[in-house]
Length: 483
Image (cartoon, rainbow, N blue to C red; front, side):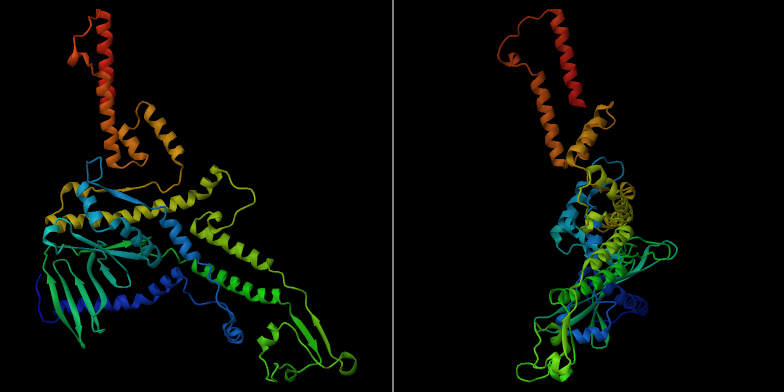
């Protein structure tokens, strides 16, 4: 790591301008997607004059289906570890790096961000702590701060930037930009209208240490698409209908009244001040000294409003969200009076489970590349076993423990289609728990074949038949231990 007061080189300047312009062009769309996930979207479909007339009496009712669509899908995706090529168990060293960087929580944030804003990022770097150099740093980054460019031929990252700000103790805001290129990483600070280099890492690894974690990459969108694209128009309609329902509820609670033979000057408050149309509508009672006989006035009331049409419309929109997202309708809060059976629930969730499996296939490519970069930064090279790395995921379906246990037992008993260790791993036991179980298995076998008379006294004489039976039992016990 070196420090300098020089500005960016010609090559660095060209990359900075190119990446910053591309990033700025995407920021409005990314921010809009994030606002929908957070429930901060503007109210759609309502006429501005109506909003002005109703003033602050009307607030948007947000049915945050975009958040539900993303969270329900992300909850099915659990990453358990990494296996190097030829290894039956998760790699311990990579698990330690995973835990050191708190990625057991960070990967969830990466997946949610990618589903909302098309992609998230992971940046790998050398650990500045000398005692922890065997644990390279891995940070999860937002696409609001990071952007990369892909090689159109290989689809690999050829350059990347990260832009962020920091507030000093005196309250001043300092802006920074880090440029990531294959052989070095350099950070610049904004100084007036120019950039000043403040740190540089000439790692010469031949790799850009930024990996995009892409959601649903397509040939026309290699940096991903959002899960919210199909949900946003339906969500806008649902929020509009729900808001209209609340406006209608005002009239439902206070039935609309009508009056003939009055003008606006007749509607005043107790001090003689003219009241607004909304106050007139929302007033509990109208009074007048005029009478129908002398002045031809008449006052009446309309029937109360029925809100069932809003309920039916919201259910129709919920069905559309269920269709485009693959979610079961009961996940959106709609269910029949007769609860569905367990088999019916699993059938309703089958498409959503399949969608989660597809997302897993897309995410595992990024995570395997991240772990290879971890090895590259730590050791300076990537072993062949890491090139065939496998990501271990939990089952995205939701079977009960009893159902899973029954299936595993049947597979184990059917001519040992799966070994005992794999059966226990399938049931969700950790490596430490499995090792404890295997130790108990060996202890049980030892107790079964151990004869205390060999240590504490002479053995009784046995007939040839008893000796043959004892030897056979001992061999069976050893076979069980080997299994």
